[in-house]
Length: 496
Image (cartoon, rainbow, N blue to C red; front, top):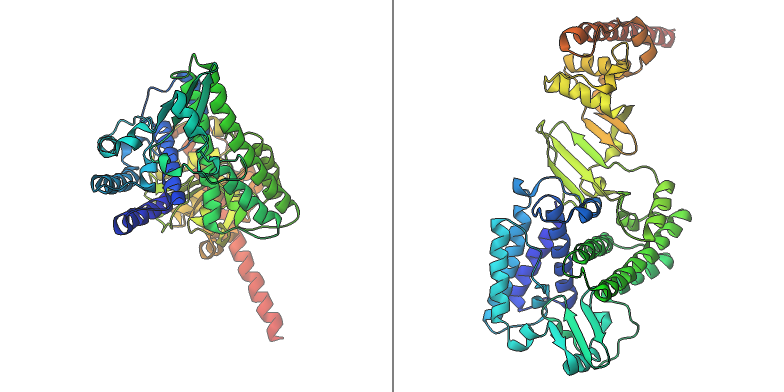
């Protein structure tokens, strides 16, 4: 999870130590990644004080493979701790620069874990050791706010970085989302009013409109902006029930900035939709989320239309054996499953392929996902249970009988692949060994199989299952013998 982002963060930590700073864009990327990571932690149970009204919105936009307490996120937290330790050393030695703009204000959402507690302490040290002008440059009011406002260049800020409001005719207030933005004040003119993240979306959209593709790294940058927009959206929902509960104007200003970023995403995904509609493919497809619950404004319409034009992509791959995994991109997770194999969960188009798997090299057979899951529990885990998925059958389902017969012959599927439908997957060589089994029509098996007495318990169900497995054995033997005779006849014809 987040392996690619972790690698980049480690490289930037090394750069900070070696060169004394990172670029403005690199600092912004770390800040966005940190924001997205914290939201993922919350949805996985790292903080339980989320208002009930926001919980569904949070769960719809951020999904993780494990609960936070499992330790699955330790490598990511360690990478962030190393980064903020490097920033702390830098500040203690008198440095400032772009790196301090990775420190948010107010402090990060509170995550209850020892590792995050260490990060909070380190960030507290960083802020304590900042020069006074940087410490104070997060909340500016009255005349100073008016002077500063003219120097803020939106094109050097991210969405949500600057919050400005005016009380009456004389009172002004500016609140900044993070430290270090003092470095971005400028007398120079920056055309347009778009923030940096919106401009990045418009830039890659123009590239695709001109017939070019984007790189995989650019696709990942677009997707990070997408997740950042979702994080701002969820944060705004949380704040509207807490800090901003009685401040409608503040809610309005935050929503306006989020809407602008969602508008940039709509431009990008409209461009992708038009490119796919004209028959093009490319790395820009990697920016498509496949989770239809995401809140991403008007962009969602273009995403849904685009996905309908593309071949279905696998969202879950459950392998029965441990597999080598490349760096998984954001919103794609690889972890060990209960059978000791590897599970890939992807919520973006092409995520499994980006993780090093080529589903095309497997032979896939459509099955009912519920029946497949029932067979795995009963026979692979020896945990019999009654289920609605089998109760509707008078006889053992043919696919259950086929899979169980093959298991007893020492042949197991490579795994289960899920897209819009469910498939059992076999390695090509393994499938050739059992092709004759899957070629038996299901109707023939169920016609000859005995009726089940009851699915309620193993004692009543197993005789029917054993009978169906016996039918598969008989029919597959007959089919294999017949195919053998046909092959002999072919050789006779060749000899003649």
